[in-house]
Image (cartoon, rainbow, N blue to C red; front, side, top):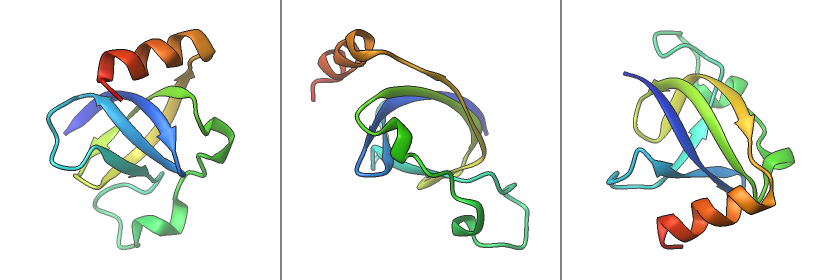
Amino acid sequence: MQIKAMGVVQNGKLRLSVPSGRPDAFVRLTRIAPQAAMAPEGDEIDLSEYEGSAIMVTGDDQGAWIFSAEVIDKAGPILTAVVERLSGW
């Protein structure tokens, strides 16, 4: 299912605040399409440059991974703090 998701990068993974209510709030991102005959780790997006920042991504939500992912925006420190506060972290 195609989604727009938002969260804060922590320890190299995206901790989702939107959408909420998932069993595991942490996801990893890959550029690989969900139907590709490759492991998602093969083209995982390195989130180290976003560590501690809120980002928005689009892609195909497959549970622990978002496939065909693309980072579409990065928040500054103020908005990142707001996202963390509203998410109750």
